Image 1 (cartoon, rainbow, N blue to C red):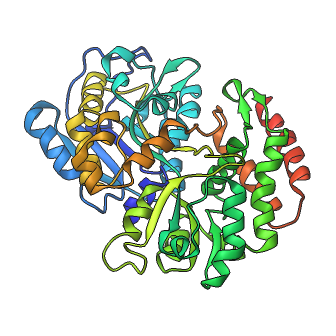
Image 2 (cartoon, rainbow, N blue to C red):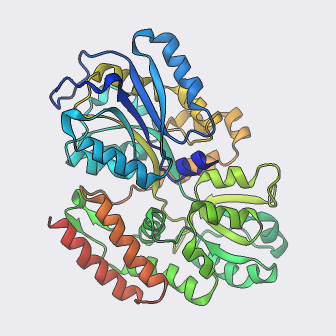
Image 3 (cartoon, one colour):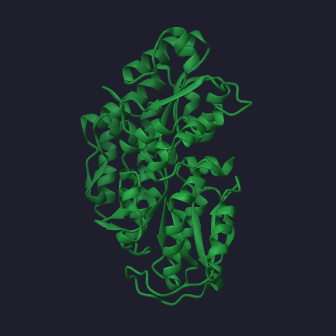
Amino acid sequence: MRWIRAAGRGLLVLVVIIAGYVTSGARAEEGTGGGRGPLTLATAGDLTGYLGPLLQGWNRTHPGEKVTLVELPDSSDETYAQMTTDLRGGDRSRFDVLNIDVNWTSQFAAAGWIRPLPPGRFPLKSFLPPVVDTATYDGRLYAVPYVTNAGLLLYRKDVLARAGVPPPRTWAELERAARTIAPRYGLGGYAGQFLPYEGLTVNAAEAVYSAGGSILGDEGTRVTVDSAAAREGIGFLARGVREGWIPKAALTWKEEESKQAFQDGRLLFLRNWPYAYAVASARGSKVAGRIGAVPLPGPDGPGTSVLGGSNLAVNTHARHPDSAARLIAYLTSEQVQRQVLTRGALPPVRAALYRDPALVRQFPYLPTLRTAVLTAAPRPKSAHYDQVSLVVQAVVYGALTGRETPEQAVRRLARELDAIARR
C-alpha cells in the first residue's frame, strides 16, 4: 500500500523519460508540434499495479510511441531531488513528461523547466474547476491535472451515534467531542499529520484557510500570513495539543501513522486523504463499517481543504513534445480516469465521475470528496515553494510543541516568508 499512501498525499510522481536520453534542443515554445517516438515512463512505487494495464492500452494503439515503465523511489523527497537534479541539466535532461506534485508546478515553471501548454488541447472544462488552478503559473497553463485529492474528516460514526451527537461542522463541535466523548470510549480525540514535513504544511494551511486567512499572494511575491485568521487557525491546533485532545503522539505522525491509529480504533477523529477511508473500511480493519467522512470543519461551518494530487507537465527540452502531449491527453481521458479510480484508488480529475451511480456505490465517499475538492484551495504558490514549506513546517511545529505562542509563530512566519519572497 506504499504507493497508495504516497498518492493519497498528493505525492505520486510519474515521469516520462526519453529513450536513449537524446534531446533535440527544442525551444521552450507552447510545443505540441512534431516529435513522436517511444517513451519511458517512470513512476514512484506503483505497488497496486494499476498503471501497467493503462500503458498496455496506450501501446496497443500507439505502436510508434510505446511507453516502457520504470519505477522511481516512492519517497517524495527522493523523487523531488532526483527530478530537480536532472532538470538542472538542461538539454542533457532525460525527462520528457513529468507528473509532478501539484505544489511543484509554480516552482518548475518559474525555473523554466517545464513549457507552457495550449489550454485548448486538453479537456479542462471537464475537470473539477479548482484542480485547474494548481496547473497554472503567472496566468498560463504549465501542466494538466491528472489526479486530485482533498483532506476529509474521518470519524467513528458508531461512537457519535451512541453519544447522540452528529459529525462536527465547526471547530467548537470537534473540540467538544474530542475533549468529552473520546475519553469515555478510551479514544484519542483528534489527529492530523503534525510531524514537521510536507503534511504539516498542508494541515497548517488548512487551518489558516478555514479561518479565512491566507499565507502568500501574487504568486508568492506578497506575504499575507500575518493576520487574525492565521493566529486563530494555528492557535486551534496548538490549543489541542496543549489541552490533550490532540494526542502528543500525533506530533510524530505522517499520513500512514495517523491512519493506522484510526484504523486500530485509537482515535475518534482523523484528518486524512480519502485513501485512509478506503483502507480503514476494508475487510480486516478494526473499524470497518463504523466510520464516516465529512468535509473538514472550520470556525463557523465547513472549512477549507488543501488540494493534493499531481499534474502532468512537459519538459522544456522534451525530444518528443507531440507524443508527450498525446500521452497526457490519453491519461486524462474519461475512460482512463475511470480506471485511475477503480484500479488505483486515486481520486480522478474528471467531474462527471463523481456523480456516476456505480462509482458512488463502490466508493461512497465520492460525493463528500467532490464537495471538499470544489471548496479546496491550493498550497501557497511560490517559485521557492520548497523553502516556503520548510519554513511553515518549522514555525508551526514550534507553536504545536509550545516553544512559541501562536502570535509569536505568526510574526516569525511573516518575517521568514518575507525574506523568501524578496529573493
